[in-house]
Amino acid sequence: MNKTKVMKTNSYAQLKAGLMVFVPICLFSLVFLSSCEKDNDNDHGTRFELKDNPASLTAPSEGTSQTYTVQSDGAWKVELLRDERWMKVEPMEGNGAGTFTVTVARNTTLEARQSVLTFVVDGKIQNNVLKVEQEARSINEGDNEPYLSFDWMQSLEIPEAGIHGRYAIRSTGDWRIEILEGADWLNIEPMQGKLDMGVTVSAGVNAAPGTRTARLALYLDGVQVPDEFEINQEGMEVVLLEDFNWLGYGEAIFHDTGGEKRMDLWTEAELAKGWGWLNIAPNNTTPSTYARDGFVKLGKTNYGGDILSPKLSEVQGTQNLLVSFKAIPYMTAGGTKDATTLKVGVTGPGTVSVEEFDIDNWPDYDADPNCTEVWKAPAAIRSFVITGATAETQIWFLGGDYDLRGKEPFNKNRIFLDDILVAVKK
Image (tube, rainbow, N blue to C red; front, side):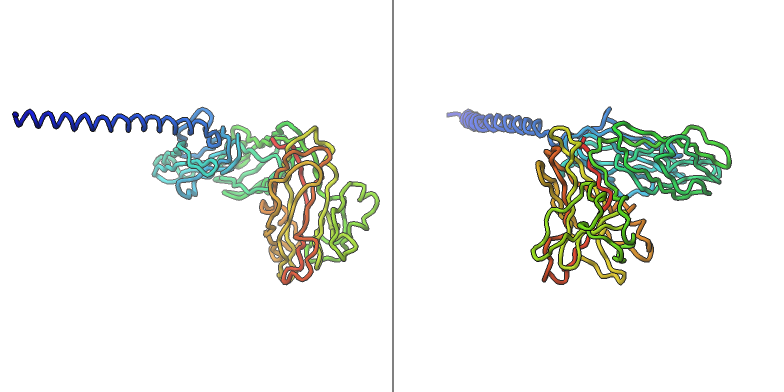
């Protein structure tokens, strides 16, 4: 037989055998990829996109601020490629639909700059990226060109539950702020200054369902700059708002316990507000919850104290509720610290998303001797969600455990509590 023909025949047989193996593998791969594609299509928990699908933000050298709308089914985070002092993002995380604002500061250098924002949803990195670029300062743009800006923003969106936040006025001269609308609910300190300075913006809860707007006029060297500045705050459907300002016992200073009043000794009018206690520890015949000057204290030596809210009578049918509150741990004047556990729960219908908090935002008696600023700090605020609440639901807070005897060195778990807000979760 011709050797060339034999070789061709063998090569054909080998090729045929190879194809018989290759084709099923290809088919299997196609089925596998199709299956994966379907699985990804069904992974609704990681859906994330920005409205109108922006890919980049180009800022002028003067700086800018841009708000983006998030459309997502999960908990999302915005992450910067690196820590950039010339750019900030607020808020940097959210859950479901929401917004975040990118603020780019004035570029005083002769070099352009850029960075990238990436996004994470439910712990998974997304394909979306937002490139941020800023033009360099022109060589003809003198450093003495006058300007005035409220932290390089076009407007400010603040949360429904209120704010006590720090921002910067950027200016080349003497500046002044005038609140044209919204002075009844908005406070800014200071209202005037010189050059770049920090200001504190404060606002309480917006207990109305609609958005409220404050309008500011900014003046540079006595002349109003073009365009008014707006501060917007969305509203919420409030079920319960308690600031305990009707309590006026003892001192606002935490370590001074003189004059505080035990809950079972409150007046009839005070008890008629509907606040009470859930349980009392064995061998303790009275509740361990005390009225102070505009807030309450949970607990004493050897015994934890609790407080039980009135029934949430404003709830319509069955609803999910967002609960926020302020809490501070106890520390003596000499710096000795209590345990820091705060437990939360409900009686009646509903389940809580969090059952225990670590209250570790310690007061600084040297910097804040009257214990007023510590309540304003964002670290004082905690929150949780109640799922399936009704008008019969009540909320309780407990400092540690009812019986703390023998639990050295933490036989004390005293917690100060204030500003409890319950609203319908959006």
